Length: 455
Image (tube, rainbow, N blue to C red; front, side, top):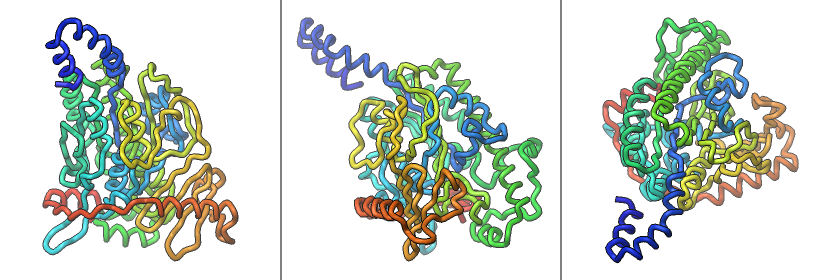
């Protein structure tokens, strides 16, 4: 029973007059609660920001997502704070940086076992905050890195962890959960995690191959991480790189169609006008732009930049269109909590995007990124890299989107020095992560990690 219903019952017991007064006092709060939208968070694992047609991709890979985006807000410069799943998702949910929550390790070997670090329970997640604000919460966590034992179930009342399901099955499970949550009569928050465009790009039917370019490869890549590194080092041909990207585009197209079916099902349930939909990714994917494939490496835009499309009910007053202000996945938790009218998450680093959604830009806004070896700061079109024992690097992404020309190669000029000082100040301000004991992964986890190329 909700807090407001329990309060109403106590007033009724005290007498009719008190009940009438209480109902008058409670009505504005109830009306406000009724106006709060459901929130559907769709995370498209390993989805590159530049694959959306609405931002200029020339191939017809995303007609359904483009149609959704036409009704909402598209952030052209959205970034993940990390370049692989586990630290990125921990940061999305907690709004703190990877070095603060500490969930940065790839699964590693311990004596006789495979172990991985978990998100400490002391961090408040967006699901916990929305739950405290009266939302019912659910998740289909379709990724081996996102297990309950690794801390990602915090705040979710309905929880299902799966490994490697295709998008059609995620839709089925997600819609079952939608029906369960909607039946509760409260606004809901649901996270669905799609894995279809993650390597090895072989989930679609072979009969669909070739729509986005030749997919045959002279030297197909191995799945094992160690063998893949050797494959990458052996001068992969431009033709093989392009074929791998074409296979990826096939997966993008499959996922787009799958999401369209989800949107149709939500429309059939009458939920689109009462639901805010957030479409994003945990990281992008590389195709040899900088001699690397997949993800989990330095924060070049192909792996650090993510799509971010936000669509809300018209009554929210958001102005559809593009936003050029750089934003971060850390901003999503404060945004959703503000949308729900909840208390801000303690010690969050992100900022609410509500003002941007209503049409304002914030040209001075900064985005800070962390990988194991690089700290990066984007402000406007400039992107600074800081690496231990190396001189700073500076890129102008407006003039050099490929990040090929280091403006600081001849020395760090005043604007470079200003960004260096700012990046170091941010780094000094961050808290140390709590100590956590690693969790042991099971045989099914090992098989899933091998299938995704992590082992």
